[in-house]
Structures are given as C-alpha cells and as structure tokens.
View 1: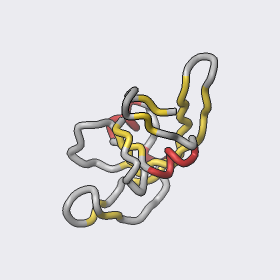
View 2: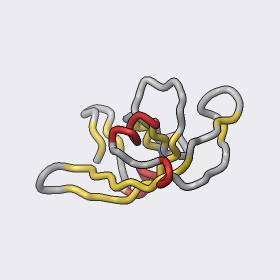
View 3: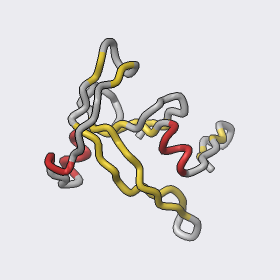
View 4: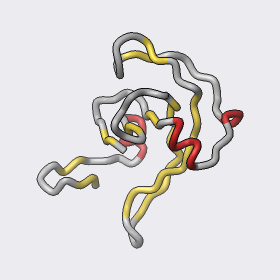
Amino acid sequence: MLVDGGAGLNLISPKVISKLQIAKEELKDTGTFQGVNPGRSHPKGKIMLPMTFGGELNYQTEKIVFDVVDLPLPYNGILGRPALAKFMEASHYDYNTLK
C-alpha cells in the first residue's frame, strides 16, 4: 500500500479483492473520479474493509471505504486522507513511520 496524504480517496486493486475472496456482488456502485491518471477513472465499485494499524499491544482497527479500480499502479492500493483521518495518523519522515 502507498500512503498518500494528498489523495482524496482510498484505492484498492481488483487483485487484492480477488485474493480476499470477495465476490463482485459485494461491491457497491460508485461514480467516476479523476486525478489519478489522465481523464476519468471508472471504478468497479466501492467496498468497506476493516484495517488495522499498530502493533500487538497497541493497535486500532477501523472500517475503511475503498474504491476498487483497475489502474496500472505499482502498489496494491493507495491509502488517502479519508483513511489517515480515521486513524488520526501523523507521518514521521525521519523515522519512516506512521503514528
């Protein structure tokens, strides 16, 4: 996953959805968006997934909404501002960590 504090939405690839064995019927309808690649992107749908940040003793789980989109990205997905805001995330670039 790429963490992008400038992205206005969370994206996940159809490959990940397939590996999680989530049926296409579970995806909710969604509109188009632009800004990730030239022109408009047409997601295959939207899905809410649980996501956990932290370690064994100190962790937090939230339900995050992802747009499922088939784009030529070198990542399984992008965590944007909506996900980071739910976790009240702060980036520490010196230590290459999220807190």
